[in-house]
Image (cartoon, rainbow, N blue to C red):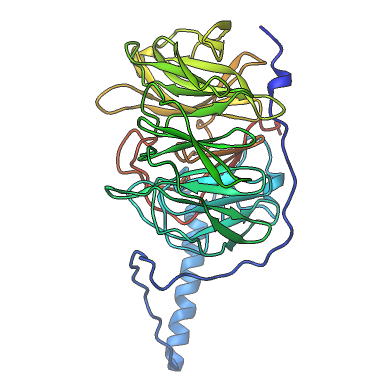
Length: 438
């Protein structure tokens, strides 16, 4: 197998200049109602203090009785991650911690970007609508509300980081779709509107890829490229299939998109040659998920193709679909997972992290696994650590996985990776790697 060490992304530990967080919530935002119990304040009579003291003594006695060795202590594993550290950049390998609540209303997996210092989220994810956002400084462990955007509230818009700006485009509110966008510069906390796109660009639920000079918007049957320097658009060739939440990567000269769901009759990748303005489809067989392996410059030329057939080896392929080598098969028990699995995955540090579930009426089990190509080993991540779902909104920052969801989230069904996550006010951070033994 070729040496993959040169293809592993370097972790970028740069931090932003200190910015004080603003605890501001817009009055016109919809916030789910919560009932708060109001405490009554007054002067208690003297006998009340005596009773209170007796109750306190009794509570201490019962606590000792039931928690002492040999008592009725119950071993209960709570889905609570490690207490938040002083520095989120110093999380140990294999450690999961929760982000603090952000200062805005609840969201369901909003689109997010990683700037190298901050995680920026704006708007809302599936089934929602919001028009504000905030940035989390990973080193400081604090949120700041970003400036008001010049576009209307929405959800499911495309977002990409250019190196200096977060570009947003498209989105929807229910079945009303938007064809506009804006760019946000975190160094100045300022927005600008994007120029109007070509009239031919009709892009519901778009995907966006940064090429190093252009933000390419892909959607159902359209594509266009936006140049942030000149604030201009150009029309591109139509993709061979609809692109929505499908993963997409920049190879250095082409864009690769994977449309896989475990059906060999439909699973495919497509490669877009930017210079030739031409798409080429690539057969990947029956695939559960495709994960791009980034090089040191962030471009992707190697891909991990996880087959949907249980027991089939993982295929390491290039952008043309040609086989480079085979890796160990997913070790899930076929007696538990059945003959086929589905998955979502992304590259974090030096591993491909997957959420894998059974293709069946209940989609169970649903587990988190990591494949290390260099070591050619699989390991299950959620055996001892409770994980939130890993979906299309998750962001990798070197060897750190940033997720909007939390381990304590209660899902409305399965598979979790789909559209059943509850709204929340923050997420989780997980550092890949094997935790040191005691």
